[in-house]
Image (cartoon, one colour):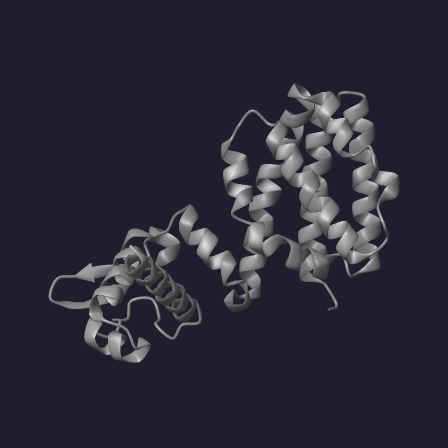
Length: 230
C-alpha cells in the first residue's frame, strides 16, 4: 500500500511538470511527446509511472494517446474542461497575461447573475457580507481577502451551485492577482465605491440594480487591469 501511494505521488508530480511544459510551449500544441522510455529516463522513474501520468493527461484533455506511437499534445482550449482550467491557474506563473484578462471576462459575465441571485434569494445574508465594510483596511492584502470572501460568499447565496464550482477553480490564483490589482490606490477607491453602492442596493433589496453594478464594475476592473502600471 505504501509503495502504491509513492507511485501515485510520483505520477502526479510528473503530470504537473508536463502540464507546465505544455503551457510554456516546450511541448507545443500538435507536437509529439517523447516516448515513454525517453520520459522515464528524463524523470528518473519507471515506465509504469510515466504511463500513469500520461493516462492522467489524456483523461484531462492535455494529450491524445496514439497506439504504438508517442502521444500528441492537444489543443487544450478545445478539448479541456474545468480540471484543465484548474491546472492552468495552478501554473499561473506560466500563464500569458491575456489569459488573466480572459478569466476576468468570465467573472464579468458571471458576477451580475450571482450577485443578483444572492440578493434576490438571500437578502439578509448578502447584506451581512458587507456589514463590516467600515473595517476594511486601506491596503492591497486586506482588499484582496475581502473581495475574494465577498465573491465566494455571494456565489454561495446563489441557488445555482455551478457558479461556486467555477469560482473554486480560481482559488490558487485569485489572491495573488488581486493583491497586484489592489496595490494601486485608484483600484481600491473604485472597489470601495462599488462595495458601498452594492451595500445600499442590498439593503433595499434592489437585486437588478446590484447585478448591473457588478457588471459595470467588473468591466471597469478589466480596463484598469489592462492599463495597470505595475
